[in-house]
Length: 144
Figure 1 (cartoon, helix red, strand yellow):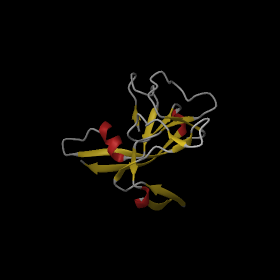
Figure 2 (tube, one colour; figure 1 turned 135 degrees about the vertical axis):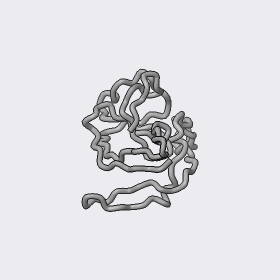
Figure 3 (cartoon, helix red, strand yellow; figure 1 turned 180 degrees about the horizontal axis):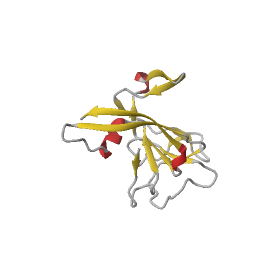
Figure 4 (tube, helix red, strand yellow; figure 1 turned 45 degrees about the vertical axis):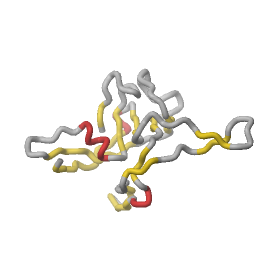
Protein backbone atom coordinates (compact mmCIF):
# COMPACT_ATOMS: atom_id res chain seq x y z
CA UNK A 1 0.00 0.00 0.00
CA UNK A 2 1.16 3.51 -0.52
CA UNK A 3 -0.11 6.62 1.19
CA UNK A 4 -0.92 9.17 -1.49
CA UNK A 5 0.56 12.66 -1.27
CA UNK A 6 -1.75 15.57 -0.41
CA UNK A 7 -1.76 16.80 -4.05
CA UNK A 8 -2.29 13.33 -5.47
CA UNK A 9 -4.72 12.84 -8.38
CA UNK A 10 -7.27 11.08 -6.13
CA UNK A 11 -7.03 12.83 -2.76
CA UNK A 12 -5.26 11.08 0.11
CA UNK A 13 -6.43 7.46 0.31
CA UNK A 14 -4.59 4.33 1.29
CA UNK A 15 -3.85 2.89 -2.15
CA UNK A 16 -3.59 -0.77 -3.17
CA UNK A 17 -2.37 -1.96 -6.51
CA UNK A 18 -2.67 -5.22 -8.39
CA UNK A 19 0.74 -4.72 -10.03
CA UNK A 20 3.97 -4.98 -8.08
CA UNK A 21 5.76 -2.77 -10.62
CA UNK A 22 3.51 0.18 -9.66
CA UNK A 23 3.92 -0.47 -5.93
CA UNK A 24 7.66 -0.64 -6.51
CA UNK A 25 7.66 3.08 -7.31
CA UNK A 26 7.14 3.65 -3.56
CA UNK A 27 9.67 1.10 -2.25
CA UNK A 28 13.16 2.19 -1.20
CA UNK A 29 15.59 -0.73 -1.05
CA UNK A 30 18.26 -1.07 1.60
CA UNK A 31 21.95 -0.66 0.74
CA UNK A 32 22.05 -4.41 0.00
CA UNK A 33 19.20 -4.08 -2.53
CA UNK A 34 16.53 -5.71 -0.36
CA UNK A 35 13.05 -4.31 0.11
CA UNK A 36 9.91 -5.34 1.98
CA UNK A 37 6.41 -5.12 0.51
CA UNK A 38 3.11 -6.14 2.06
CA UNK A 39 0.61 -8.54 0.58
CA UNK A 40 -2.69 -7.25 1.94
CA UNK A 41 -6.39 -7.91 1.69
CA UNK A 42 -8.64 -4.95 1.01
CA UNK A 43 -12.35 -4.98 1.86
CA UNK A 44 -13.60 -2.89 -1.05
CA UNK A 45 -17.32 -3.14 -0.37
CA UNK A 46 -19.28 -1.18 -2.97
CA UNK A 47 -16.77 0.61 -5.22
CA UNK A 48 -17.17 3.81 -7.21
CA UNK A 49 -15.26 3.78 -10.53
CA UNK A 50 -12.89 6.63 -11.40
CA UNK A 51 -11.38 7.21 -14.84
CA UNK A 52 -10.05 10.74 -14.25
CA UNK A 53 -8.12 12.65 -11.58
CA UNK A 54 -10.08 13.96 -8.59
CA UNK A 55 -7.59 15.60 -6.17
CA UNK A 56 -10.37 16.89 -3.89
CA UNK A 57 -11.61 13.39 -3.08
CA UNK A 58 -11.16 12.83 0.68
CA UNK A 59 -13.56 9.90 1.14
CA UNK A 60 -15.47 7.49 -1.02
CA UNK A 61 -18.52 9.12 -2.63
CA UNK A 62 -21.80 8.87 -0.72
CA UNK A 63 -23.17 5.33 -0.97
CA UNK A 64 -19.75 3.78 -1.71
CA UNK A 65 -17.09 2.16 0.47
CA UNK A 66 -14.09 2.59 -1.85
CA UNK A 67 -13.02 3.70 -5.31
CA UNK A 68 -11.41 1.70 -8.11
CA UNK A 69 -9.70 3.39 -11.01
CA UNK A 70 -10.07 2.17 -14.55
CA UNK A 71 -6.78 1.50 -16.29
CA UNK A 72 -5.12 1.45 -19.68
CA UNK A 73 -2.98 -1.61 -18.91
CA UNK A 74 -3.23 -4.79 -16.86
CA UNK A 75 -1.36 -8.05 -16.37
CA UNK A 76 -2.48 -10.56 -19.01
CA UNK A 77 -5.39 -12.35 -17.25
CA UNK A 78 -4.72 -15.52 -19.26
CA UNK A 79 -1.59 -15.99 -17.14
CA UNK A 80 -3.16 -15.48 -13.70
CA UNK A 81 -2.10 -17.98 -11.06
CA UNK A 82 -4.48 -19.49 -8.46
CA UNK A 83 -3.12 -20.29 -5.00
CA UNK A 84 -4.87 -21.53 -1.89
CA UNK A 85 -4.20 -19.32 1.13
CA UNK A 86 -5.91 -20.09 4.44
CA UNK A 87 -8.26 -22.46 2.63
CA UNK A 88 -9.40 -19.86 0.06
CA UNK A 89 -8.58 -19.58 -3.65
CA UNK A 90 -6.66 -16.36 -4.35
CA UNK A 91 -5.88 -15.12 -7.85
CA UNK A 92 -2.50 -13.51 -8.49
CA UNK A 93 -1.94 -11.48 -11.64
CA UNK A 94 1.41 -12.72 -12.94
CA UNK A 95 1.26 -12.16 -16.69
CA UNK A 96 3.07 -9.56 -18.76
CA UNK A 97 1.48 -6.11 -18.94
CA UNK A 98 -0.95 -5.71 -21.86
CA UNK A 99 -2.94 -2.73 -23.19
CA UNK A 100 -6.69 -2.63 -22.46
CA UNK A 101 -9.16 -1.42 -25.04
CA UNK A 102 -11.83 0.82 -23.49
CA UNK A 103 -15.18 -0.98 -23.34
CA UNK A 104 -17.81 -0.14 -25.92
CA UNK A 105 -20.96 1.40 -24.48
CA UNK A 106 -24.18 2.26 -26.24
CA UNK A 107 -24.32 5.93 -27.19
CA UNK A 108 -27.52 7.76 -26.20
CA UNK A 109 -29.89 8.09 -29.16
CA UNK A 110 -27.66 5.99 -31.40
CA UNK A 111 -28.02 2.54 -32.84
CA UNK A 112 -24.24 2.08 -32.78
CA UNK A 113 -21.66 2.09 -30.07
CA UNK A 114 -19.26 4.77 -28.90
CA UNK A 115 -16.03 4.33 -26.98
CA UNK A 116 -15.86 5.43 -23.35
CA UNK A 117 -13.19 8.03 -22.59
CA UNK A 118 -9.68 6.64 -22.18
CA UNK A 119 -8.69 6.31 -18.52
CA UNK A 120 -6.24 8.82 -17.07
CA UNK A 121 -4.75 5.96 -15.02
CA UNK A 122 -2.18 3.60 -16.48
CA UNK A 123 -2.65 0.91 -13.80
CA UNK A 124 -5.71 -0.05 -11.79
CA UNK A 125 -5.67 1.25 -8.23
CA UNK A 126 -7.91 0.39 -5.31
CA UNK A 127 -8.54 3.41 -3.06
CA UNK A 128 -9.57 2.97 0.56
CA UNK A 129 -10.34 5.94 2.75
CA UNK A 130 -10.74 4.00 6.03
CA UNK A 131 -7.69 2.10 7.33
CA UNK A 132 -9.98 -0.54 8.89
CA UNK A 133 -10.81 -1.81 5.37
CA UNK A 134 -7.35 -3.38 5.04
CA UNK A 135 -5.64 -6.35 6.59
CA UNK A 136 -1.93 -6.94 6.15
CA UNK A 137 -1.43 -10.64 5.45
CA UNK A 138 2.17 -11.26 4.44
CA UNK A 139 5.54 -9.53 4.31
CA UNK A 140 7.43 -10.25 1.13
CA UNK A 141 11.17 -9.68 0.99
CA UNK A 142 12.49 -8.77 -2.45
CA UNK A 143 15.92 -8.18 -3.92
CA UNK A 144 15.72 -5.17 -6.23
